[in-house]
Length: 230
Image (cartoon, rainbow, N blue to C red):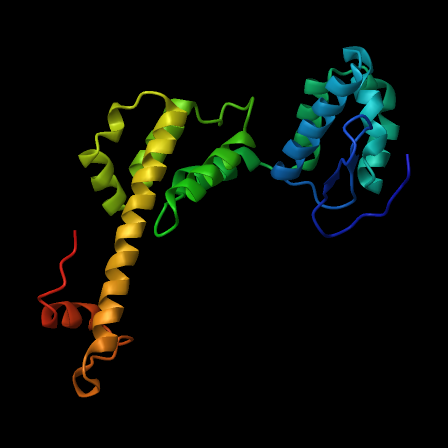
């Protein structure tokens, strides 16, 4: 095991070739990196058909941080005897910040769509939730859907109710349906904006309202009765 010195930056996972053990670089271990390390190790085990009782010793040498290397070498016999799942539990308990699960879950529960595209936000929440896989804090598909429904922006929520999106039972199909509703709504808003900009541009200069002042859009709309939004 190469004893790479400790880095104050976050660790990273390097795994270019799935048939070779991954590398966990020196640095701070985060929940996201721990999950990436686990996934890369599992991919390696599958590609090389590594026996369960040999899995930990096959990847342990990839931990290049001096602290983790010392921890492994000090406890090598005990760690090598662990299942990979038990090793990952021990690794997280030892090297992640205390109560990391509650912080990830809080991040999930406090997330709001705001003005972001729905699909981008939904992917972010699913990726964050994946960090908690096999942990009691992990949200079920039903819980994740409730979270997305409750915290999407108000206009999209209204459009989804009008479009009866709630009738779609399959989660992935529901995500796709809401994505299309959101994109349609955004296209409509963009068309409205362009119509306003075109109206302002084509007005006589002396009558134009400065578009970057507060309330400009409502003044323009009031003065442009011939613009119809559908």
